[in-house]
Every structure is written in structure tokens, then in C-alpha cells.
Image 1 (cartoon, rainbow, N blue to C red):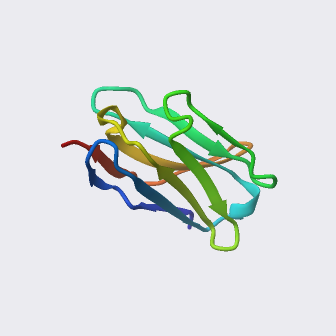
Image 2 (tube, rainbow, N blue to C red):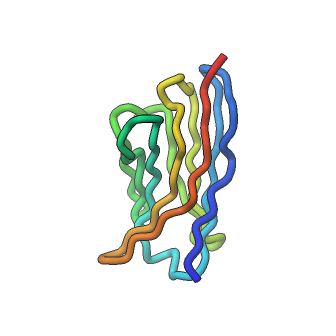
Image 3 (spheres, rainbow, N blue to C red):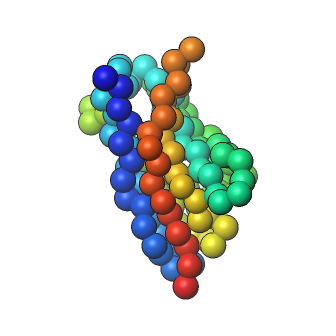
Length: 116
């Protein structure tokens, strides 16, 4: 069955870095656009970054542009989110998403907490 498993979350001090990973199975990973979303307590889930299936074109929310980098490894069925210069407002549950036409898959999320 389809699975997206995120890992790499944790507690980090402001200014620190984390790399999130999402490993996929059960579908043709290379054909899907991959995205990261996040949801902070009491807020709506918001899009963070995306990467296209073939060319690997990336896009970022303004709030993370210049600090976060999304990448993918189609051979490993994995997508990553490198997060640098983390701020307290980056605290959220981060979700991996796979999208293609009407197919839309989600992972279970991984908690990122930025606090001193």
C-alpha cells in the first residue's frame, strides 16, 4: 500500500539546522510532484516547498525562501527538506505530500520545535 514516512524532526535552537526525510513506497515515486507542508498549533496547514517530478524544479513559500532547500532522490524514493537558520515560527508538524492528477498522498508528519 501507499506509504510516506517522514523522519528527522526534533528540537533545535534558533539559528540551527535540521534535515527532514520522507521515504515513499507503494506508488511510482518518480512520476509525482513532491511537497512539504507544515501545520503549527492552532493554524491551518500551509505549503512550504515543492519539487517537480522530472526536472526537479523547486518552489518555496516566501517565509522559507533562502533558508530551506527541497531535494529528491528518485532512485531512493525519497524527498528531503534541508532547513537552515531556523526560527521559532518554524515550529510545526511537517508533512510530506505526493501529488499527481487526482492522487494525493500524505505522510504522518514529524514534529519540528525551534526553541532555546
